[in-house]
Image 1 (cartoon, rainbow, N blue to C red):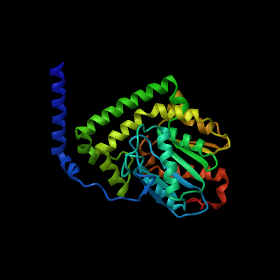
Image 2 (cartoon, rainbow, N blue to C red):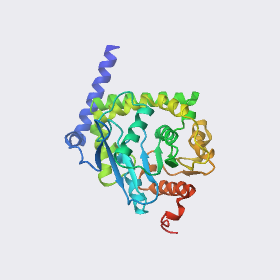
Image 3 (cartoon, one colour):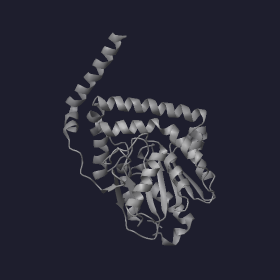
Image 4 (cartoon, rainbow, N blue to C red):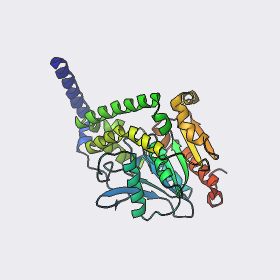
Length: 327
């Protein structure tokens, strides 16, 4: 056994050396990108927030990222929203990106409470539309149930359903995510992710400053350790979202999914659409040519913007929306 482990460790170290020799050295030595947005004190610690677009009578769009995600993930979506006169704010959860670490555990209640504090400290007191990607489906649902008077709509982008997460298939998925998180944690601590970041760090397909941030933090060890901790708390976050109750059927919900439509026939796939199907104002759009990650990139950001417009229109803000390009 010791011989096998020694051989495996030697192979990993050799891989690191080869990656660095192939160009990873520049990534290892690269400085952290400059701060985009601002750091906001929420009570003895700070969270980074990035807001774009003009202030208006429309709801503020607040984005929530999936596991190992942060504000940079939404760079292309925010640009597309701003181009249509819609203001949005993305942020880094505690310990991710530019934000200070927060107390453990990093479960759904911790994350949602931080976001509530951040919006208050930043002076965002008006109506909201929440947009959540992947595992953020758990957090956006919990936030909406805790703040029903403020949240005017949800856009769920290939997002996890707390109902399905607690089923047998869902628990198996969560175990798979936990295994993945452990692998990320190990590879990050060994320096592998920093070395491969220049080529593998941005699967979303971002541009400019958001791309630079995504690549740099892909290999950041603190970032990945906190991301793994959040992933291990996904089961708790799902239970907390379920315990908070059911979404009102009057709440407009748009769902955007990736991949072949046949994927949506599994229990997991059906769970992605569940919130929209239970809403009186529900919308589902499947993007067959997209991946789970690049749904947020420049090729598909317009689909998410359209979904935001749909829920705003259903919530009674249609007259305040600019005419969509090409219409």
